Image (cartoon, rainbow, N blue to C red; front, side, top):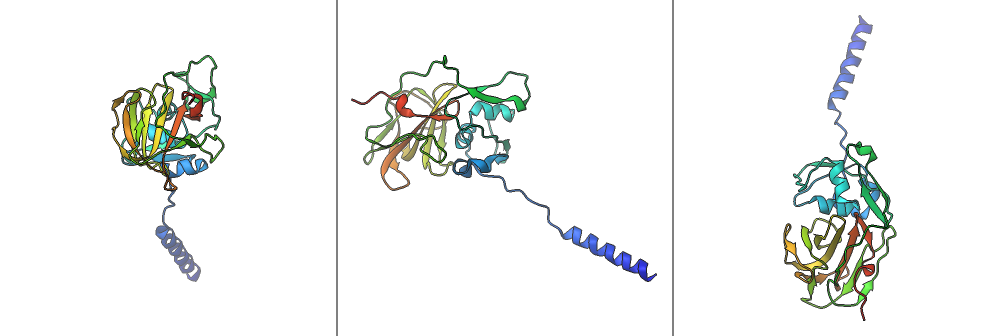
Length: 244
């Protein structure tokens, strides 16, 4: 009888401890950390208010088409707050091309070395006047574009024709950011703006005023400008006209 009572007491104690245990929670990395720490973004991202597929793809350094296909999101790529997206950042190679052949499984979605016969987009213009004080550096943690210093109330121009696919402040260290889609392969970005003059979905022309230059993270009046091809940063100086 004593052994039975001891067993029942022990069993009740185990059940009590088990019932009080809290379920393990896994903190998913926000997009603002994805840019700072690419390795922290290997699993998933929870869509926040005002996110777009383009801004999330930009923050994690992947092609928006890859991200859409990976998560079975069809054009025009509508997202809902709280939606969980699979994220799989790939190689940091500067020249890559998105490829997928339906109906291949998601595991076979991949990037490959860019086909040299692919023609680049033409007609680029400088997004603003001023001296380039920081050049492109594609190493991890390096400058993914160029920084151009300017003056108060200096205009920022669209560097090519396209459609605004993001206008907001959701990516840390970019401040007020505008992203323009110029073609299926090319996007450009304009950061540190004091004021944004265009909205998402708006069509813009080259040389159109889209923003007022603001201050960078060091307090200097400047524009941070990027061009990405297939989701990867490329050197803007290879596309912009050479200054005389």
